[in-house]
Length: 334
Ligand code: TYM
Image (tube, rainbow, N blue to C red; front, side, top):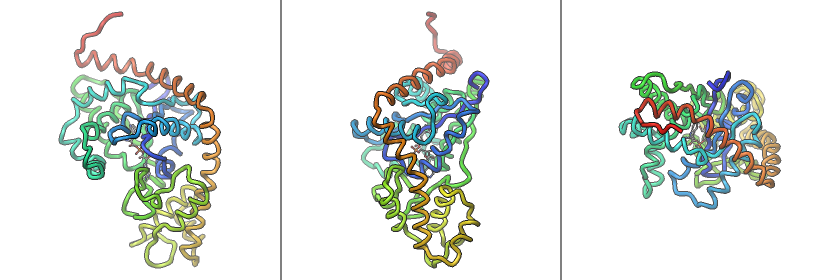
């Protein structure tokens, strides 16, 4: 609880150009909480270095992610927008929570298994303890609600377990957070392989639609998207690729699966894929225009970042002081 408001927290890694998966599964929903909740939206750069990053690119992407937050409708006057590395309590509580997180729990995380398979030459300790840092991000602000795509469910469950464990040992310290996972497009799949999640780090550019892709690129990527056997636009057995395109179309064009099946009854995949591309490009055009405007004003982005970091840092003080006291750390009276 922040003053009289409940708290929302979420984060996005600045580890690649964001995709329509990030948009539909998470960022698009962020502004819907801004009035009723105290909202913290963080660019989680500490998380990004669990995979090796080029320093100049990491810096640029951190600005870009912040600009995209705003371009997607987050007003910095109504939300706390900041970079994780600017608020040292994240790393500090992250370490503390490492000591309340079990090796066995971290070993079961599917994202750790996937990422260590992809980065076999850099399976570092941070990649392993990543979910404890994510728990710290959330618990630091006494968060009630965490809007994320469904791939983050397991991490969120662990954050709840860590909070419950800590509260069990020391008495009520953390709010146990709930996830907010959208009904539609909670897991957007790759356009090249509908059994795989669409991921910003995919090496196959045709598998991924980026929020900032120009219209012709978006249309081409959807045109090339794999489809299933048959030619009907409907859900069902063996229709994973079409179902994925239907959920993307539904989310952008605000249509239900039934409406989409009716609209494309008797029409082929070609027509349908062109319509998905158009709906996606139309929805993203204003976001792209606003993004370009914001990126041209770096001084403003820096101002937003500094203000957000100062507010966030201030808001971590109470929880950190409570945690220190409960654990038994000595305090210096100032
Ligand atoms: P990240 O950066 O991988 O993704 C950011 C958000 O986008 C969602 N998402 C998707 N949703 C639907 N379909 C997809 N294909 C897709 N790909 C990504 C993610 O679920 C996420 O909501 N660990 C987090 C970042 C994080 C965080 C946090 C989130 C760090 N601390 C605290 C919430 C609260 C991550 O790697 O997200």
